[in-house]
Length: 313
Length: 243
Ligand code: SF4
Ligand code: SF4
Image (cartoon, rainbow over all chains, first blue to last red; front, side, top):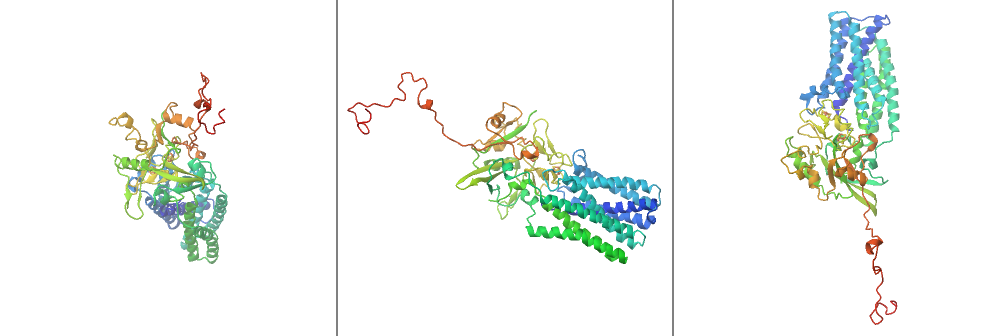
């Protein structure tokens, strides 16, 4: 597939927003059970919710650039019974509304923030499932058609959200830096493991479709001689990224380093030195790594339609 | 239940692209709007088409065959492109099984094109909506056309009659018979999409002459098949062997 930056930004930005919200809610739950020190409602929870909302809104805005007809985007809520994309289109604004309520409740000092947060958490997890299933449900995109796709969206989003929450906690000077940093490190390591598992799985994929099944001729040697037109078409632009193996492996190793070990090391150093810049650098590094990760996720998927577009003429 | 479809005979297709141009001509002139082209007479032309004819070489020279392969939406009986559409713009008609896109509802998210394994959906770069073969739904029911012309434009155009059109759920239709009797097959059966369009394979064309076509089976006077016996005086090839 040819990676679309609108979708790359959509999925990475809402991932940060979702992970950030879960970090806030985990902190609130932790203090309710007296595991971590309680935080100020306004300067931590309300601010954090506002920032999470900012990430979600930025992701939503990016998604509009993917549409040919953004003015009709509201129609996309119609087919939630069958389409994971439609479900995402419903759950994302619902989750944003819940985060808004959660932040507002903290800001105004209203009760029942734990309940609001619980509702928002359920929506948050549902959103991860919707986003992942958009890709995992297309069974002939074999690189995506695995539960690992959903798990990776979940873990990568959570890791980046915790990585953002850590410098935020450090900057507002509260006692959550160590538990949030520990969460960010553990989530990053878990995401590293599952993303590596997906990479290993995809290395061994045997494509079910071949040029033989594509045109229905059972002969071991079939070569395309013409694809029906001399220059490009939607089919050659949308499904081919046109990068060589070297660029692909550069992006792959880039994201493996930037998204996992580099931020883990920076978070450890930043926590030990209580340095906000180092912790911020950890988040930025990981976010850049996730952009590369998402680019690779799309580029690696090999669409069976490509079998019909192997030679121009 | 009706399932309209095309059956394409690869044994007959000569790769002339008449169906491509006829399809483009009909569908760019219809009420649903044009099929846009960019730089048609310039460098790097591109455009939206419902139908493409591709060419494959099967085997290796000199034991090779050139196969021309027309490809358009196969109107799958279980179309993966339909359930993924978030707006309901992509749908399959219950009455005749044609898979269509409602251009007024489509938001151009391209998700359906990702979900079609055959690469037959194309975004129109100017109308910004998804387009694909409609099986000329605006021709085949048009009472203003003579009965014989109520067929898709590609079928009308094909000079070799490589394209058959009909209802594959009617066992007596020309398409059902062709599929049954000439080994019709579906593309990429591994995904369970059950394409309605079928293809007929290449066949070896041989002249077969049976003995009874040269000699009458009953041979009433027992003279068929006898060798001529010229008289002794008549000239023969070697003047001897006939006797
Ligand atoms: S060929 Fe593709 S576009 Fe046509 S019905 Fe099947 S899946 Fe949908
Ligand atoms: S591009 Fe249009 S028809 Fe295709 S899935 Fe999106 S809204 Fe539906």
